[in-house]
Length: 146
Image (tube, rainbow, N blue to C red):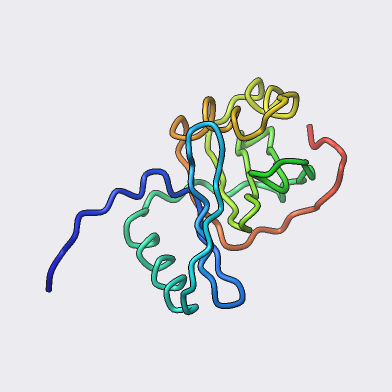
């Protein structure tokens, strides 16, 4: 077996739809969605590799997160649990990530920013422990949760 070293540090999320593997790539000041033809097994394989590599589980939120719908090319919704200090981001690709120990001030600033993608890159990505989640009981609304 021949091995190749991989650096997937800029790969934020993956998805699969209609025979295409969607890759959400962080390009610094913006996110790019790249779609490549691939069977569903490619997506499932990447999910499996992710579960093997990322073993740091975040604590579960004590109650479902209320999600705010956002207008952004990066994400479709964001949510925050004030008691547990967990931030949740649902990316445009459909991937959902939770970030631990996020300060309330960061949540407030995220809601007020002019560019969700820029704020995420500068203030959230790489700054907090995070975990991709496949399912969570969410209440999608346009009301604030805190």
